[in-house]
Structure formats: structure tokens, C-alpha cells
Length: 252
Figure 1 (cartoon, rainbow, N blue to C red):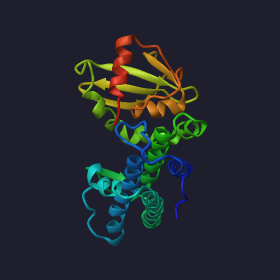
Figure 2 (tube, rainbow, N blue to C red):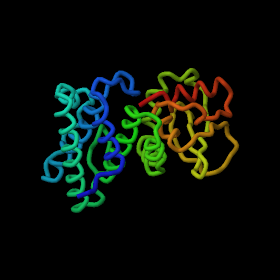
Figure 3 (cartoon, helix red, strand yellow):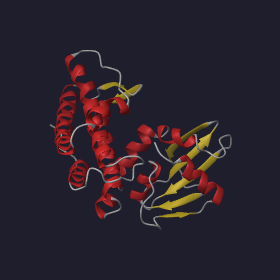
């Protein structure tokens, strides 16, 4: 079976130590909603992988609201036990699929998803939502600074992460190019061209307008979060461009 990630360990520890009614940094959610959301992802992955292993049709992916509503109604201690059990069950099923078919791909949220990508996807969820309840501590900085996680975010969700932000774009018909620069890592470009918006790794060191940002803060920033500690982002953009960048990266 695939081993539990350090992100999952850290998330489960933090959520166990946080009051269920504590308001998180994820708008509109307390710790209880965070727990239901992450448990719901594991439940939904299981719901897809079990029929796939049996050779049956894979069901359509349910909405967040549909899968999370019954979980939110569970008493918090029982929900945390369910979260732990479903996360373990999901890892077992992912391992079973990959042992049989390393390149397996299944339908997921209206697209095709490599089964191997579910593990980094959950690592991202655990790291981000741990920050939502624990904030900018050293563990968050270490977990969110992992290049594997931002690589997964950009590679799998480069366009999706900007969909909501485009609805807040103050200049939706204008092109936009800016870079998020992190020491020791490639520049990450935020691009609006021909009506489309995406995140993409830079292939050069061109002198585009940029923001200097540490690795952990960059992962938070592209997911619409804002680090607690000031000074982790330093802008070399005009004020209108910085405001537009923040609007484009305003949440998934």
C-alpha cells in the first residue's frame, strides 16, 4: 500500500488539535467543513476506483456540495475517524490500481485523470487546508514549499486555478503577463492571451513584470490564499497590474 504522506500526517495532526467551530482561512468554512471537504475527496476517489478495479463503469463525479453534505452532519470526533479511515482506504485502492496498471486513467470532474495523480492531488489538499487551520508556521512553509506540489498545481490545474479569478478581472479583454519569481526555482508565469488565462512555467529569464515570492507563499498565492506574514511577496508591478494579478489569483 502507498504510504501516508507527510502532508497527510501534518494535516491530520493539526485538524485533531483544532476546535471544530474554529473559523478557517478558507472563506465560509470552519474546521468541520475543512474536514468534510478533505474526507469527501477521499470518498469520491474511492467511489471511482472501486468500480474501475472491478471492470464496471466509473460513475460521474459528484459536486462538492453533494458529497460533503452528509459528512458535515457527522459529529466532529466521528468525522475525524472517518477522514482517517477513508484516506487510508483511498491509498490502498490507488496502490491496487497502480500495481495492476501503472498508467491507468479514469474520468474525473469532466476530464481524464491519471490515477497516479491522485496522491499529489491529496498532498496539495492536505498542505493547503492545513495552512487554512494552522497558518504560517514552519511546517506550513516546508510543506507548501515543495516543488512537487506547485508542479502538480501548475501541470494539472494551470487553467482551472484562474477560472474564478477571470470573473473578477478588471481588464478582461486586455493581455497580461507577469512572473512569480522564487529563488532557486523556475519563474511561474501568469498569462492572459486571446481571451484565455493560464499558469505556465517560464522557459527563459525574460524581463517581464514580476513579484518576488518564497516557495511556500507562491503555492498559497496561486490557490487564492494570502500569507499571514507580510514581506513574503515583493512587487515589481505597477499598482493596477498588481491589483489585476491579485484578482486573477483570487481563489479556485
